[in-house]
Amino acid sequence: MTSYADFHRRSLQDREGFWAEQAKLIDWQQPFTQVCDNSRPPFTRWYVGGTTNLCHNAVDRHVATRGAQNALIFVSTETNQERVYSYAELHAEVQRMAASLIELGVKKGDRVLVYMPMIPEAAFAMLACTRIGALHSVVFGGFASVSLASRIDDAEPTVVVSADAGSRGGKVVPYKPLLDEAIALSKHKPGKVLMVNRGLSPFTRVAGRDEDYTALREKHLNAQVPCEWVDATHPSYTLYTSGTTGKPKGVQRDTGGYAVALAASMKHIFLGNPGETYFSTSDIGWVVGHSYIVYGPLIYGMATIMYEGLPIRPDAAIWWSLVEKYKVTSMFSAPTAIRVLKKQDPAALSKHDLSSLRALFLAGEPLDEPTAKWISESLGKPIIDNYWQTETGWPILTICNGVEKQASKFGSPGKPVYGYDVKLIDENTGQELTGANQKGVVAIEGPLPPGCMQTVWRDDDRFVKTYWSSIPGRQVYSTFDWGIRDEDGYLFILGRTDDVINVAGHRLGTREIEESISSHANVAEVAVVGVADQLKGQVAMAFAVLKDASQADTPEKALKLEGAIMKVVDEQLGAVARPARVRFVSVLPKTRSGKLLRRAIQAVCEGRDPGDLTTIEDPSALQQVKDLVGG
Ligand code: PRX
Image 1 (cartoon, protein in one colour):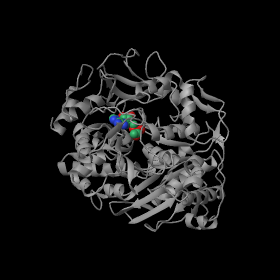
Image 2 (cartoon, rainbow, N blue to C red):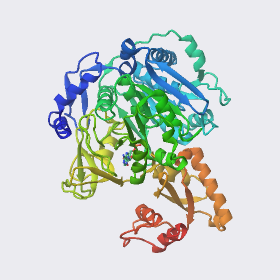
Image 3 (cartoon, rainbow, N blue to C red):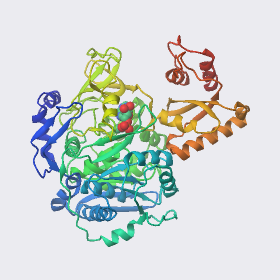
Image 4 (cartoon, protein in one colour):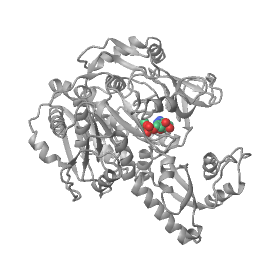
């Protein structure tokens, strides 16, 4: 057996050989002629000359060998549905959806925006898009009309696939009114909206635009839509994510590199085997849902569980009951969910036979030691932290137990994953920090491995400027996370260097929230910061300066206005972005040159020393924040 250190070294020193070998894990229509073309960095092209198809690899190629085996297991504790699709059934459903999209005018290279709850049709739509060479752009169902409108304008979809409603905690959450509002707000008007009607919430149909999926599916029941063989570098999808500015970035992913990266990760990281069952508790609206609910497990010939519902409803044992029922071998979740389960019923796990489970993988936010200890002791299984980003599509740091069993360390996601040349960089000098226990920006020396973002959708310049130009004097990819490495080579993630916050594993941009709050008629100025939270990891806190302060001059009035502002955020961005509190101050802490001191506000909210304040314009501003948060 190769040691992991050798495996990793080879992935960088013999990049071509290493990735040519991994490429055997997927099907190719035409073999590639060049593994890695990095002649125009940072625009790396993987598997040049090769043609393949993501949907073929996820569905069609398994039909002959495992057509009757489970492919997609849909469980909704919201609507009490449970439906298992075999690979053959999935194959048929994807073709029905593909034929419907084609009928609505979708062609290779077109974008299809998917705004849907966690229902099988969402996965069918994604797979149908990649089948015909169209790009899907899934927008998280928790986002509201303004978030959605900005994504519609950027992606310019030919068709939007949506549903009447989602459901959360037994409460119906209508989607259609938000979609209608988003389309009214957007400049780009999608030609067609394909509606999946779950019968949860009556909606108004826009004549000539809205189409009914039940009817179209019926029409295409026996559809045979061949996979469109596309270049390995053909974009498979875009997925929007938040950054420093208010405008979300469309992360663009390729086809061949992504398929190879996911297949390899199922083997080396996620300890999967074809025919087994994988359960990721994420949502298709996030990158984990793309890579590890839909594509990764299916590409590897595994069954994947798609779960709609809360982790604690009907009770905190629901996920573990699914592990037992479907003999889940690998499970993927987020630390927040585990903290919720522990709070609810720490004994829920012991009610079920979890012997099938090999490991629990956690990602998306820092894994705190008490949570890691509790779940690891309760499960008696390895808990594998993994660190990555929407941009990379698959893990950057973890323990690759599929290559060589290695010890984990509490608080560390692990070591650099094969293919990633991870560096810690001094943000001021651009120098690499090679010693132990030095804090720096986590950066990746190019080329990025297969599967990572190709560019920002329609904005190559932004890709270069945002990710590859933030460190002085060198072109390396910045993750915008702080990190530190210990004597044994394990990395620890210490939080973002930018204005991105992480609420319950959901990545949000504070600037977007600020823009939304500013649209309230009485708000003159606002600062939003992420503040440490026991359960959610972080929550958003807003401090606003009012145009008319008399509107909040009593506690009752302040509370009312706070509620009204939260409502604005709910309506524009979605409840997921709603700040935990909106507090009112007469002035915000700024430097003399007018820069908001967000870090200082954050420190004060967390009861920490705000650090060097010599440049602050008005020290009483920070005092106001302190007084409000009781510091
Ligand atoms: O700050 C890091 C944090 O989440 C960010 C990426 O979020 P997103 O694009 O939504 O992708 C999530 C993919 C799992 C990172 O920049 N983050 C992610 N995983 C971890 C983490 N922080 C600490 N530990 C992790 N395991």
